[in-house]
Amino acid sequence: MLHPTSAPLSIALVGYGYWGPNLARNFHQLAGVKLAYVVDPNPAARAQAEQRYGCATAARLEEILADPALAGVVVATPARTHFTLARDALAAGKHVLVEKPLTMDLDEGAELIALARQQQLTLMVGHVFEYNPAVRYIKTLIERGELGEIFYLYSRRVNLGRVQSDVNALWSIAPHDISIALYLLGQLPEAVRCQGASCLNGRVEDVVFLTLFFPNNLLCHVHASWLDPSKTREMTVVGSRKMVVYDDVSTEGKVRIYDKGAFRKGDVTYGDFQYKLHSGDILIPRLDLHEPLQMECAHWIDCIRTGSPPLTDGENGLRVLKVLDAGERSLRQEGAKILLAR
Figure 1 (cartoon, rainbow, N blue to C red):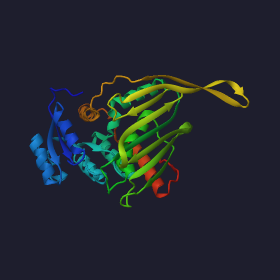
Figure 2 (figure 1 turned 60 degrees about the horizontal axis):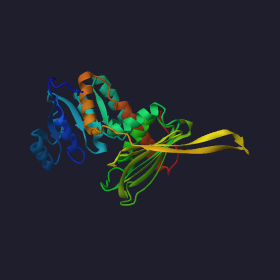
Figure 3 (figure 1 turned 120 degrees about the vertical axis):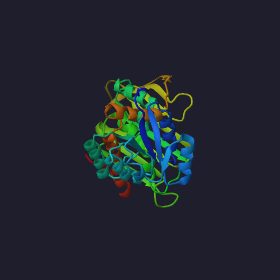
Figure 4 (figure 1 turned 90 degrees about the vertical axis):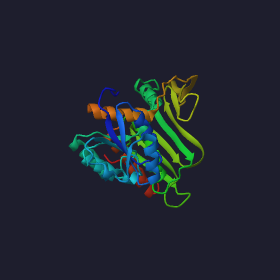
């Protein structure tokens, strides 16, 4: 964590729209950090940030990049602008935290990684759920083998609201569950299949069904939509010994461990293996649920200070981007199975 006696790190936040205020709040509250600038083309947004945090504001990023005291830039703007803003900040010698997705193009993502390495700067992607204590707890269960062999995962991230017209649900919503799945399983899928529907404006898909094909017949299915009757953020992990449900909107325990499974009994009987179903207790572990975004912001600052690579570094962002790219190509080919770029 940060050392309060260190000189404050001066950072700028670009984008004070949907997610930017949450980032501004967290950086403002972090010890050893100074929220020096908020950048947004909207005068009302700039006025609100200046009043709330006493920071300077600017309409464009290039207005502040020459400030030698500025250490880092946080990019919280529409996905199609991520590459240009992150590239300009890195080129100016600033550390960068960019919201998901890293970019919307594989070559651009690789370019940012190379530039950060060349400049010896920290590039981090805001895959916030990898900092969620509940997700991290499930990761430890898998690593300890408590769930047994992982058979499949599936998630639902749906809601009625925040309808978008510039990007589809694959690029807007699914990156969260893709990053969780890659984090939990510690590997990339071999192939991806994606189908969706443009229900509202006929231009972008409001709902997508994404399937990730991992080695050893391990499947992950993601349902993402902003056109659904209720808010659901849930992932289920099914193992040979136990099963886990992660419910991010639950108020009575975000992780539930089910001591359930199916076990093969003895030798083949009448040409088939026989199975015994086991159903035991349900455990709701007590978790210290710090705000994941606060942990993400503190981690980026700590990596800047120490030079340590972030958990969700550029390479992490590129792995998620590879899945998104394959999913988009599958969408355009009516759900064809697309092998992942290696």
